[in-house]
Amino acid sequence: MNRILLLNCGPHSDASHGYRLARETLAAAGITDAHITERDLVQAPLPPIGRDYALAITSNTAHDADGLQQSEQLIVELEQHDVLFIVTPMHNFTIPAALKLWLDHVIRIHRSFAATPQGKVGLMKDRPTFVLVSSGGFFAGERAKQQDFLTPYLRYALASIGISDIHFFPLQGLVFGPEAVAQAISEVRLPMSEKLSRALAIS
Image (spheres, one colour):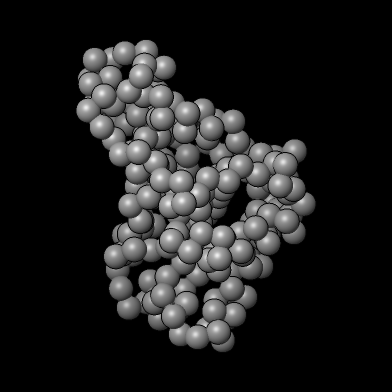
């Protein structure tokens, strides 16, 4: 059975439309709670990158050094799961601070990527990754009224550690009332469910 790491990155926690849709989609695919690890990056925030981490990185210490413990825990957690599912809002055109901090811990030289003359080379196994992006306005498609820096940034950041099988699903126009929310969910539900089912069958 596939193991799913579910990152919830928004301020509404389990009350968000994105989180509820993600759990509904996983349940419909036959994934039980026993095979889902949830990490709510807002309700249980990660510590910021501190001096101990910086010193450990620059001194090339062991992976389990004191300053790297949180980073190592998050990387091992990711390694232990077959699928990554990120539920995130778009904040000011890009990812929220909570998700950026998770990336800062996980993207680590000599551990999740190697530095080469050609740039970062990922050291982690690729895995199906689903990103459900909630937004009050529109950032994708013909109704888009703002620039989307989230999608290219997150795609590039995850690729730097070896994850390139990434699927984005925009959940847009959520501030325009219940009908708009229902429409946004209906536009995403089927393609996301189909893509997840195919990924689970392969992985």
